[in-house]
Length: 212
Image (cartoon, rainbow, N blue to C red):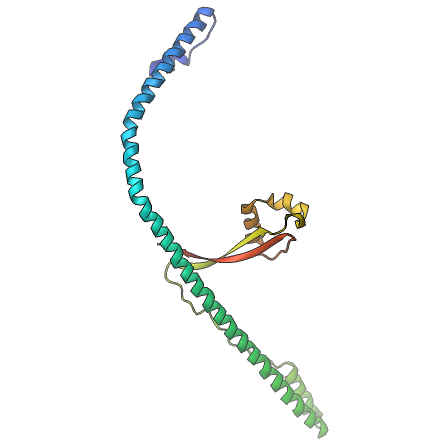
């Protein structure tokens, strides 16, 4: 084979005899190809069969582990989502409580200012009104309550889906999407769903990542 290859590098056909001779070489080459390929297949077949046996043995376990991982991650994400919902509700109540206290305290200061004005104490009244105007009762920040395990973290995945093809502006179809899901999700991620486009719904999902 090596000799045939090396001689082919110098082949120059200048006559009918040489041309015919090359045709004979081609037939020899095809015969050799078939013989070598047959020998290759005979040697590879047992390896392929052994590989298939190994694959058939391990793949079901790997598939089950993948499904188990997905189920566990879903349960963890559901818990994360529920705890975040509780945290946001508690934060909302604290903010509402702080606003009510501000309103009540502002009303009290304004009432005191009114009394000071009635008594002719304008400086005191002005001081109380300034205090009422600049009054701010800070709201405690409720931190996330779920502590992630080592090597695990939650990421937000931004996505988009076509809801009405007819409503999508033509320039967006050409410039960004070509109705390609990968491009659509990439655009959603780069803009963090901050841009609204008719006919397209942008949304986000939580994904739990883990490192070994």
